[in-house]
Structure formats: structure tokens, C-alpha cells
Amino acid sequence: MLATLIPLFDENTAVRAYSVFAQKKNFLLNPSLLGTGSLDGAGTILGLEVVDSLGAGTLSDNQEVFVELSKISMFSPIEENCEMPHEKVVLLFDHSVPAESMYIKRLQQLKFMNYKLAIRNLAIEQFAEYAPVLQLLDYIMLDYKKINMVAAMNFFTKVYPGLQLIAVNVDSLEDFEELSKGKAYSLYEGDFYRLPVTKGSTKVAPLKVNYIELLKIVNNPDFELTKAADIIGRDTALVIELLRMVNHMAVNSEITSIRHAAAMLGQKELKKWINAVVSHELCADKPNEITRLSLLRAKFAENLAPTFEMAALSSELFLMGLFSVLDIILDKPMKEALAMVNVSKEITDALIDKKGDMAKVLDFMQNYEIASWSELSRLMIVYNIKETPVYDAYTDALAWYRDLFGIKEDSKAGK
Image 1 (spheres, rainbow, N blue to C red):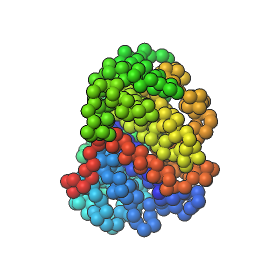
Image 2 (cartoon, rainbow, N blue to C red):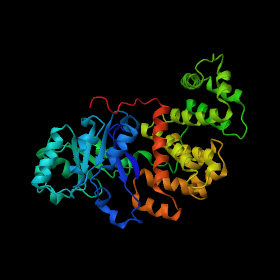
Image 3 (tube, rainbow, N blue to C red):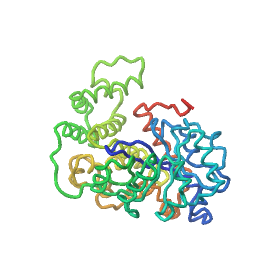
């Protein structure tokens, strides 16, 4: 199985929910699973399996989670298989679920159990036919590229005033800003939040310069712990995080100085911690999903190293994933951004020219995170990769991110 999380934002680019998109098996090796068949079969809901195995805290930190339903799986005993509080689960389906009495009755039952309901891929000409279904919904996803959003907004505001609208496929910041002005849409999905900077040059803020100096030091082949420790000492937030990290590792050790704390971690662990935490601090003025994306890519790439027969380059792959959004973080073209930190030529080749073995891993991750299952299926055949190690690599990255920031695991609370 493969699964990924796609964020849904509010008008302030804060993440308010995640959609869990899952694939049972490789489509190209199992043609019968193409389309909605990927969720049919035994009637299981893959998204709920992911939620149950990882825990809601790992996925969404107490936010809503959208999971896919098919016309078969919607009749499964969902309440018995759902560990999350029902009101945090949004059951998502499309026009393959017909607007017929049997299905409408089942949706009413799910609504009565406090699940939220959402529909996507509904054409304008189907609105009348699906009127009994629309009356039950909490959300409707509207494709920005296929529907007149102004007309749709006017229609739903008038006919279904309680229905929350989600604009999907919003892939430019200009489109997002235009849509969010009217505040008619509750959520937005698309690549608008991670558009790369391709031109221009923005002056880097003083605090970011300090962080970049730290990155330059630790990414030298043999850096001095004392120099890194002294720069950490200039920033209270970094000092607190360092002490928290060291205290977690050595409960009974008395830390006498920042240099002492750095020495306790050692060069390898300090380098990894600094790259992760400093990247997080650099993202302070960005949507929080940029931080998450950067760190998840870092750990995901590191975890994929053995799968791509690149185990010896796991540390470099971690750094490549971490810096894959450095242009967004620093508001500079990638070439300029990478010039400000010390990275290897292989990482530069992957991030700027999209060439080399590391670029294969980056391309694989980028297709994975947008649930491009058809392309993933093709790539797994090309690289002779199985689903299980990829899924394990991704879910381990999610758990690592959760533990890194102490996200509370409370998936069963409030059920």
C-alpha cells in the first residue's frame, strides 16, 4: 500500500485539514485496480487503515482528516474501524456514488454518527441530480480549473448556505489571493504555497543570516563543534531546543554550557539536528506546511536511500530533501539560495539541474506527495521498487516529524 497526505489551507495559509490519499497496489502491475477499483475489493477504507496504524496525531495534530470512500466501502462497518473522534473524520466520495435511495440512506446514517461528508469531481450538470446528497454534505470540492468559481459560489451560497466550499487545483499564488479575498471558500488545495522563486533577489533578514552562517559551518566536511555552539548561543530558541534535545538523550547528565551540550551530541548528530531545526526556524515567516514539507522530504529521502541502493548517501539525501524548498524559505532562486550554504555538487545538481541519482529520489518524492499514483507505479517498475518499503519510509518520516516537535498522540481521545 502507498499513502500520502495533501494539505488543505484556510485563507491565511494555515493548514486546517489533510486528505489521505492511498493506493492499494501498483496500478500498472494490477490493471484491474485502476480507477475506483483501487478502493473497492473487500470494501476496506485505506485512509482509515492509515489513520489507525499511524494515529491521528501523526497525521494531523488534531485537525480534520479527509478519507476516500467508494460506493462499496461506504457500506463497511466504518464506526468499528475508526479510532479518531468521528467529528474529525470527513468521508470523501465522488460521482461514482450514485444519488440513489440506498446510498442516500447510508450517508444519512454516517451523518447521524457524527461523521462529516464531502464530495468531489461533481460536474455542474449533476448538481440538480445530487440535490438530496448535497443537502447532507459539510463540504464540496470545486475544481478551480474546470468550474466558474464565481458562479458556483453564488449558487451554493444561495441554495445550500450551510455547505462549505473547497477550491482545489489552485496552483498559483495569484489565484489563491484572488479567491481568498471574498472569503467564500473555507479551504484551498493546490501547489500555490510552494511555488519556487525563479527570479529577483530578496535581502535576507539579519536573523536568517545567522542561521545561514550556522548551516555553512556544519555542512563543512569537518566542522568545529565550538564554532557551531557559539553561533547557537546567539539565539535563545536554538539554545532551548538544543538543551531539550540533549536532556532527552542524557537524563542524568548535568549540562554546564552550550559547548558541553554540543559535545554531548557529537558532530554527526549535531549536524543533523542543526540542519533540521534551523530549517524550521528559517520557515518562521512561511506557511507551516513549508516546514513540514522540508523536514518530511529530508527524512523520507534518507529512508528511501536503501530502496534506491544509495544507503551510503543517506545523509546527503537527508540534506537534499531538507533544502529542496530552500528557494521558498529564503525567497531566492535555488541557485542563489544554495550558494549561501555548503552543499555537495551532487545535491546542487539534483536541486538546480534535476540530474544525477539524487534527482531520481527527489522526483519520486515529489510524485509521491501529490498522490500521482500512475507515475509512481511506472517509476517503481523502472527502479524495481516494491510498495512496502516506500510506504514504510514515508510513514516513518511522519512519525519522526511528530516526535521531533512533540506532537501529542491522541487518536482515541474523545471518541
